[in-house]
Amino acid sequence: MKSAVFYGKHDLRLEERALPSVGKHDVLIKVMACGVCGTDVHIYEGDKGAAETNPPTILGHEFAGVVEQVGEAVTQVKVGDRVCVDPNQLCGKCYYCRSGIGHFCENMVGIGTTVEGGFAQYCAVNESQVYHLADTTPFEEGAMTEPVACCLHGIDLCEISAASTVMVIGGGMIGLLMVQLAKLSGAHQVILLEPVEGKREVGKKLGADLCIDPIHEDVKAVLAEHQIHRISVVIECAGLKQTIAQAIDLAGKYSIVMMFGLTKPDDEVAIKPFQIFQKEVILKASFINPYTQQRALDLINAKKIDVSSMVYEVRGLSGLEEVLANAELRKKGKFIIDPWKD
Image (cartoon, rainbow, N blue to C red; front, top):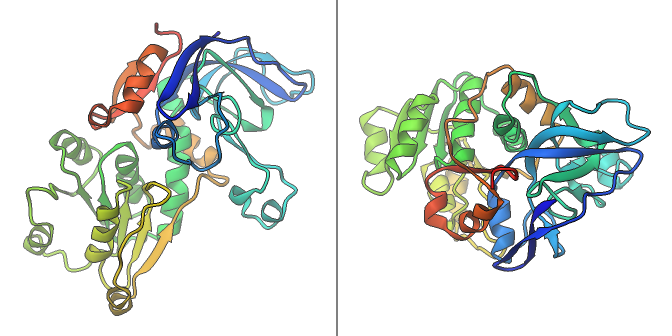
């Protein structure tokens, strides 16, 4: 099978690999779509993602496809089923799993990080990680279940209510999902900060009430002009030191700042504790997707959330490395890899 194999920093090779073996509890999936995630970029750049990656390995953890083969003990799926995958397989036995916070599992298997993932024509996963796509859900949308699941955990932690004014910083795939989820959670006003005009336009289409260019506009002046006195929740989705500092600065009194964007592991942000004290700002972060995959898929299958408007291009495996290496290209939008496209 065709595979994109990660060997180390800036070293991705297209190779022919043997089909994965299928254990008695496993499902072999013919991968039809796999999203390129910021975590894949971090790993390609030599940084740590949510879990340690030991090269050589096949990356890709946002994927959907068709069941090609099932192990003898599999009972919940059959050959021909259209499915997506939760890439985080929990052990169910460690302290954290038994404490109800399994996303901190001490023995987690990360499909596409610690074991082979979806940037290949086939991938074998445990039956426990497989979820059914509706017949009306395209594979490209099914592949977005994992990022929606991650965003749902972040949104849950934001404690959004019907009276909330929510600001989202960064209009990439994750930020645009957050705009929609904030609306679905009952926020009466959602503000998007995004320097790229095309992304601001998509943000308006997806429900942002106010879009601001933080590079060419005075954000605080625009907020004052629209008589917005208090931002109750700020969701930072850019993963930059300066935007995290900006989130804390723009947060209103008695507010929550969700640091959702993934920074480099060694990044440090200078904060002013007195500023946080004066406003009673609560700083939060969100780690992967605990028990939210089914909820995310329900939203996608029911067409309650748009996961396709922000997709820029579908490429084959040969186009993956350029996406991982080119930050300017990634600014155009979300990229999906179809391993059968080449």
